[in-house]
Amino acid sequence: MSIAFAGGEQVDPFTLKDEDGYFWLKGNLHSHTTNSDGKVEPQRRVDGYVSHDYDYLCLSDHHRITRIDSVSVPDDFTLIQGVELHPDNPFGGQRHHFVCLNLEDDIDAERMAPQHVIDQVRAQGGQAWLAHPHWSSISVARDVLPLEGLAGIEVFNTVCQCMGRGESGIHWDDWMEQEHRIYPMLSNDDLHSDPEDPSSGRFDYYRGWTMARVKDRSAESILEALKSGATYGSTGPEIHDIQIDTSGDAAVATVKCSEAQRIYGVCSTYGAQHYDPSGMFEEATFTLRPGAEWVRFEVVGPDGSKAWSNPFDLT
Ligand SMILES: [Zn+2]
Ligand SMILES: [Zn+2]
Image (cartoon, rainbow, N blue to C red; front, side):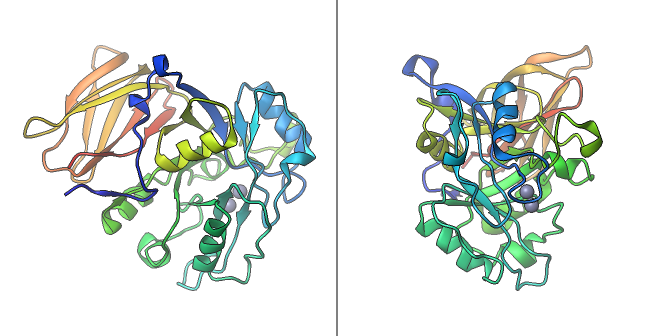
């Protein structure tokens, strides 16, 4: 029996070949402007990402959509319209934070139950992502399991990292364990500060991104890649290829990446690590623990920065 994927059909980005016209786009789906509590105006926020060689961005201000037609971008830069919504949390935890992508109409979420908000986002053809659950002190068992229809999880958030709770990998694994279902991830900045004014900032910019495997630069193609898991997240390393041989008793993984000091194979059972005592490497083949239903990979770069693959179904 195969393990279910939350977003319908899962797509392995490493099966989408250059020769078939696929390429990677680098983007950030979580940012704030002066339309909520960000320090810079929407146009300057966009310009910052354009000048730092990103390919796509969402201005996900709190509560109200910042319209993408209120700013201008080069032809080869893609804006995704969205918002960060904060529905009530009736389950006992703190207020929820959902990064909602591809929305046309505002949703007055603050007095709504979280399930109602997810349903309204989906009714518009949008995606509701569980943002920074570690930072929000969200308990998967208490606050997330009652919900249905979230697109996935923000596994890394730069501004939360500045406050010591940037990674939500444990929440991700726990969620998949309890639902017996694979969810894809996002890696985002969630920046609020002004990168040009160090006194305003928490160094919360240009450090977390999501790579999407697409055939064109349209918002539709990027959104489809996010939802289907044709992505990886990063704060530095590149993942070039992942192949998994499941023919033996235990799966064997081969990962190709930019220079790495170690790779973790995070499994639904127990993890595995590749480490080369002689130094950095760009390719690793290693055996995973037997009996795992899924594995996801974390690549650690020379400076400790990380990349996260989406989980692979091993069943
Ligand atoms: Zn938030
Ligand atoms: Zn935010």
